[in-house]
Image 1: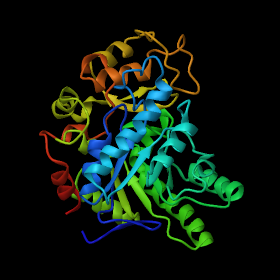
Image 2 (image 1 turned 120 degrees about the horizontal axis):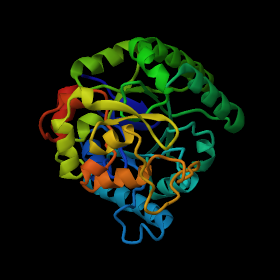
Image 3 (image 1 turned 120 degrees about the vertical axis):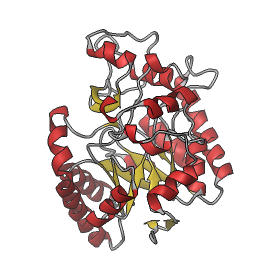
Length: 350
């Protein structure tokens, strides 16, 4: 596949972005490995400092410190690679995490779980590229119009995340079945919106498609729609280089596609995760008050949520998979062995 991905003055030799996965799934090791192979490696900032010794006492400082540590780890693996962060808008310290990542030297910030309306302000004066995650023509129109009017700039890249993606989804739960059947038309509509701003700013704005991409055929279908790259996450979990615990990787290998279910996340939007003992109990109406609130989300009342997303993602990241929340894509059951990042990329992109 003789294509590259041009993001402003950055050129990825392979038009593939590794999706950000938190907590602790895509950190410096995985991002560095992908960047070394010529793709774009993405570190998830979600509770990134969960292994820092002072995390429970001061998660804010622990997370900021870990941002620099994980980026340095990735840079050591891929000194000339493109490495960025996925930072969720829904987190309480979104602004501070973006600024910390930019100061540390991130090449790219990708933001979803809400519209990153203020992102251009936070990267002002730096070379870091910015990319919103959108799932509909409407959200693309709203955000790009707002950035144009308020900041006089536009996106460097747009990630379109479809209904087969893992983790948090940009749709209402009842919309997902319909979107699964008709999402190609939505992608084409988003491409038209982005093209308007590319013309206005006289520059290329690449669009990358995410969600359910697990084979060469999926990649080819994406390019036929007119996008310039793909974002892949689930395929990189069962790899040697992934930062996840081995028990977490094994859950992916053992899973069937029907084990990927839609859950309601405390973030306030639906997500796709593995059906495991913990999620079965949640589905039966059990609630799990957090042992300690770490103040991770902007809008969260610990007394009203069925479980603490940080607590349960950390359980999974540390290998306590039966008591954790394990996000995954719709095609999680298609991978049955641990591979190397290089082999995953070769299989997908040639």
